[in-house]
Length: 150
Image (cartoon, rainbow, N blue to C red):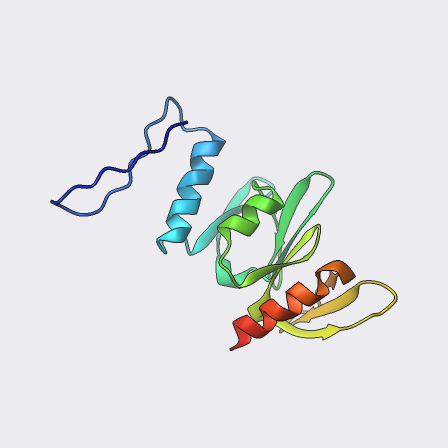
């Protein structure tokens, strides 16, 4: 894959992707670009045969297990076509790793119950759902929480 930038004096800025086929790598790059320029305010998620365009701000956390990723809203659990590391790149900077298998929307966190013997428990606003914060990610997570809260 080649990458090149051409500077033009006229017209509007334009990003063009030339490819043989529109495969999942190309779609992933498109999503990254859309997110970077602010056009990607929703994520395509699915449940069964139904696809949903869920606003990113409604996602409270994402987790992976058994080789696939799911995203949680306050009342739904939806399948994601992306792996967790891809979601980490796509989602806005307010999402932070809470464990090897969990990404959390820092703006939706209501409380963090620290547990010295194991993972801490994260509670969210307006929902009984919980996520776990591993000890190895605790310091980084709390620093990101303080950054996003300011």
